Length: 270
Image (cartoon, rainbow, N blue to C red; front, side, top):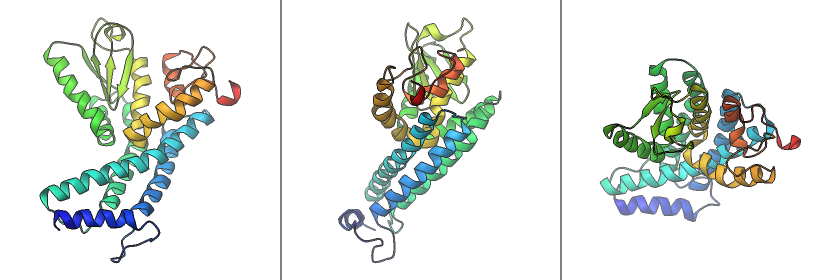
């Protein structure tokens, strides 16, 4: 199919939101997005269960993030697929939205179910499979992090591979920022032997597994909007918990590993 025909297919889907199928019997764009939201909701819940989320408000945020992640991921994959088809003038007989939904649902299911099991082993081989799952669900941020890892390693900086993700040294201090399957880690968090403490690795790995279950767009968009506002309303900072264990919901299970505080609280207790 030509590039112009591909573009016409996408425009048809966008211009016919009231129809459930197009003339060939394929579901149109907006219907697939509704399905993506439903699938994301279910997989967000599955991911929360797989990661042993016990606090109701964090569980709810996983579900909300899953719905958002499903829609945003399908939109992203649709743009990428149509772009590739248009660039190479490939056959677009299969709707890109459906392909995007299948890609998201498959990767999210593996990330929600298998990634926690793999990360909780002591096997670097299992961790490598987990990292790959997270990479599929976080192609932009993880790819950028892998490029940064290469530069850090070439320059002789500290790099650690643990719990299904990479930790790279990025300067002095004690902060850590997980983006996809790579944690940008300040040097104060590394042990003298060049490894990060395992409790810190488990904390950050929890965030990376949230990405694996609901996608990088679903996690980070939900984190900095609903999570940040809701967490601030509890008295915590937008990206942390306060001394009482209240704050951004996506931080609560992760903080049980680093003990700061050891007992996060739900909204109803804050």
